Structure formats: structure tokens, C-alpha cells
Length: 338
Ligand code: UFG
Image 1 (tube, protein in one colour):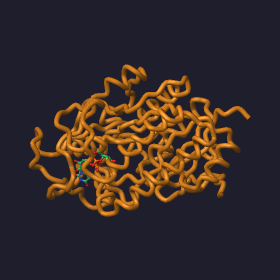
Image 2 (image 1 turned 135 degrees about the vertical axis):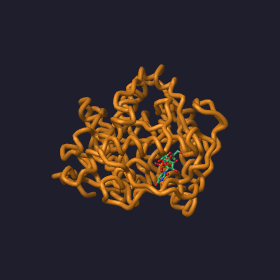
Image 3 (image 1 turned 45 degrees about the vertical axis):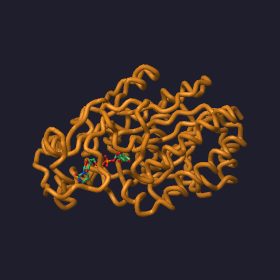
Image 4 (image 1 turned 90 degrees about the horizontal axis):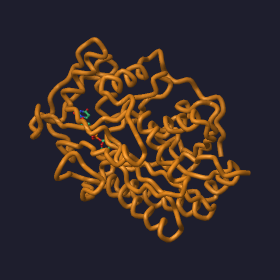
């Protein structure tokens, strides 16, 4: 069997499921490995095979690779909450490092030499300057960012020792949803600004709490660089094409280069919903840098990447559509349990 299938770990999660679908739409064979601890099988089209299993289970990974003719991996599986990572670093180092290393070992043994990795702007910590280029100092301020950076180092070492071609895609604030509304941002518990603002506006959650308005930013609230999940998916496909040609991409920022404050997000969400988002002002959230904005030049040049849906209004419109109660995702027909 030719080895052309993409193994998508964490493919039932928010970014992973959007990538899996984009890859399928681009004509690629995809197989998802997910333990469903964070994602849901219903976020995937039924035509994509889903293996319910653990990335650290070497035998399962090897079997999936051999059975499905896997030639490349897109590694999205992992824990993603900054606050939780500070309280439970053991879990974060276990899944994002130890089990992810077991995955890498299995891939090496299977002769797979292309790896896309879902990294994060959290590797930078509190940056000295924005916009942030990839060459900025990486000094994570929480266990989540530390595990992402540590795994990037592992990928680099794997390149030198075993010839792995890799890309570490450092997302800024992933948001939005597929415009058909069939897949949505779904974290439990939800901690992200845009889904919480939409739900507060729709009345399905209490008023939003704004975490601080005394930052050194134009309106006192934190500034973030929101990037549509479909634009993330297209950057992954561009990076994968390079890896499959035998080029290592290394670390690459995925953001727009334009930041929005929490207040601006609340205002835009109100306009999109046609009703004001109720909110209360609260204290700062521990660990929030005032301003995180990408310098995305490298992605633009190397991947010829252009964002298409990352205007804030489009992001919020797509996210809001996916959160309307009538548009909840359908259940996938086939779930292969391992
Ligand atoms: N915010 C609020 N109220 C809320 C939720 C968020 O005011 O109820 C604010 C936050 O303080 C922050 C902004 O909205 O200023 C965005 O917060 P999110 O939780 O949506 O996203 P973060 O910027 O905290 O986190 C994102 C990713 C992380 C990644 C990090 C990089 O979700 O995975 O960027 O620093 F690590």
C-alpha cells in the first residue's frame, strides 16, 4: 500500500477536526486517532475513519500506520488549558511530552518522516516586543507553553538523528468555525473569549467577565491576534506540502499581525448577534500577557499563506453560526473503536 495517508492525532478536537476535513476536501486520505477526552466523534465527517485510542500506545499507533498506509502525521492531540497546566503540570508533561514522545518513537519505527505539530504562541511567554517573530526569545510562563516548546526541541533532535521533517505551527488565538456550522469550538470547560462572548450574547451562559481593564493597552483590556481555524488548516496543508518534498519548516507563527482588544471582541460580537453582549468587569486573570500579536511574515513567505476568513467579523459570524442551538453537529455514522 502506498504510504500517503495523513494520521491526524487529536483529530476530533477543534483545530484537528477542521484540519482533517480540509485535508479530505483537498483530496487526501485521512485517519484520526483520538481518545475523545476533549474532542467529540460528532465533529468529524462520517467518511473519516476514527480510531479511539491513546497517542502513547505504541502498538496502536504502529498498527494504524501500517493498516492505513500512513505517510505523514499531523499531531494535534494534547492538553491546551493554560490555567489547568499550572495546577496540574504532571498531566501536561505526561500527555504533551511523554506520550507525544512515544508517538514520535512509533512514527520513527514506521519510517514516517513528515510531522506537523500543533504548537502555540504560549512558547514565547511574555514577549518584550509585538508583533512577535519566530526569532523572539522563547520563555514560556506556564507548563502548557513549556511542554509545547520542549516538544519542538524533540522534533529538532529527531530531525538531526532520524531525518524527520517537521513544522511547529505556533497558533495565536485560534477561533471561528467551519462556515457550514457543522463543526464548532467545543472545549469543556469553555474558557475562550469568543465562544463565551457569543454564548453570553445568546443568553446560554451568564454575562461575560472581562479579565482586567487596567493593562497598558489602548482601552485597558488585553489584545490578542485571532486567527480563523480554516486559515490555520490551510497553513497546515501548505507546510505539509513542504515536508513531503523533504523540507523542514521548523517553527512558524500563525496569526494575522493585527490585534483586537477584549472590548473590541465584545463590540464586534454584539454587532454580529444584533444584541449587546452582557459583561461585567473583573480582576486580571493570572498569566495573561497584555498583548500577543504575531509577526506572520515567515508563513506568508515560506507557505505563500494568505488568510481568507480571519477578519474579526467573519470569525465571530462563523463561530456564532456554529453555536446556534439548531445547528448542532450531526453524529458521525461510523466510529471504529480500537
Ligand atoms: N478573556 C476575558 N474573559 C473571559 C475569557 C477570556 O476577558 O471569560 C480575555 C483573556 O483575559 C484574554 C483574551 O480574553 O485577554 C483571550 O483569552 P482566551 O482565553 O480566549 O485566549 P488566551 O489568549 O488566553 O489563550 C490563547 C490560547 C492558548 C495559548 C495562548 C497563547 O487559547 O492555548 O493563547 O498565550 F496558549
